[in-house]
Length: 53
Image (spheres, rainbow, N blue to C red):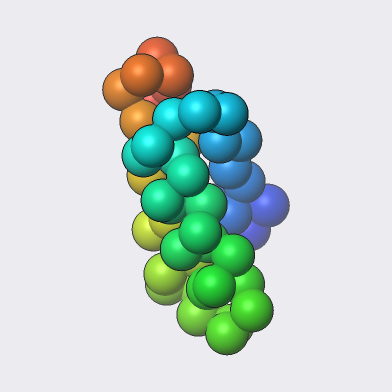
């Protein structure tokens, strides 16, 4: 389950994904699991991708 919670496939050129990916990277470096989950969720659920988060 952890792998899915933190999984994120940002779309190149997408501003929302770029911002969330930066937050995800910082959260990984600082060990902030909550922020990491939230950033990954934003990327997964971003409407432009047609995915359901």
